[in-house]
Image (cartoon, rainbow, N blue to C red; front, side, top):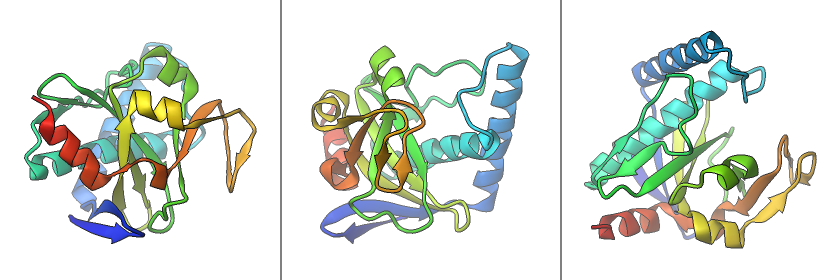
Length: 196
């Protein structure tokens, strides 16, 4: 893991080990089986196992990064098939973080969008969102940064279902903000270290 400075925006780049990817694939398969056994309808598309694995992996990599930074907290890994209510990681103070993942093919430039589904955010907003981009081919993971939820809701624009934002077409209504408008990785860590 190392911090890279991209356009004066510090992001953490790491490469997931194959064993970490495999572990998260198993978590995804378990979660999907549990959701199906409960009769829950999927919120994911046809690539559900791949997308769900990416979610678990980016949450895990964020947890590892926080441990390396000396920030006390815990990954709330849940493969029960139930909703996690928008909390993936919890600081030891109880401060709640939702890790949002997005698939990329290259290192994410600052103009890339960060998305939060509006229905989820309005229903149970966490204290902070953290954004992580993942390349399935290279297993590269980029923790680009994040922002307290209240600040994000004020700065983000609402992108309606079907609306285009560059090359991205929203499948649902969402809050959209450019990566370089959020806090970078270094600032997120600095903030989390101040929590008592």
